[in-house]
Length: 151
Image (cartoon, rainbow, N blue to C red; front, side, top):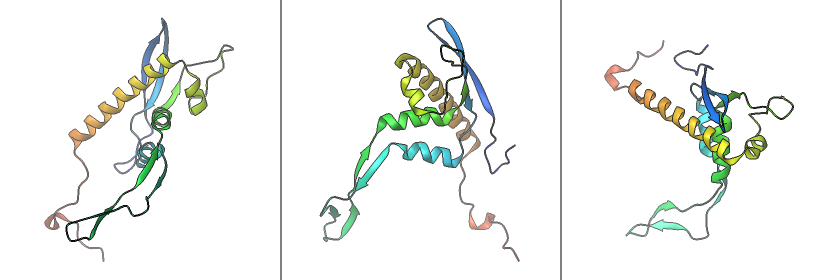
């Protein structure tokens, strides 16, 4: 069980229908900071600074360094689904469960099935973000509100 500081490992079951066949997916109720950062960074394959790529202001001082980023949107999409999925009822032709945490399994799904799962997860993630916004975001306290120093 989580606390105010950590993520509770609860899941939400979402019932779906694919080509007339009912199935379900279990999605995490909330992602941890590590899981969220993993999704954000998953598509970045590499980055580099091109030679002589510093931006200059009017005085000739460097403002920012330009970076070239090699991104894989495909990998980011599969990582998002893999990270949110906690389980599902999908099985192979022998009735054995398909491994939901395996990116190769996700890649092997029929495209319209994967899109249905991705859409359901995206809707759930949007609902989670909206609920978190209603609760308010973490922010530094003003100096007058800060906790007393430890002794």
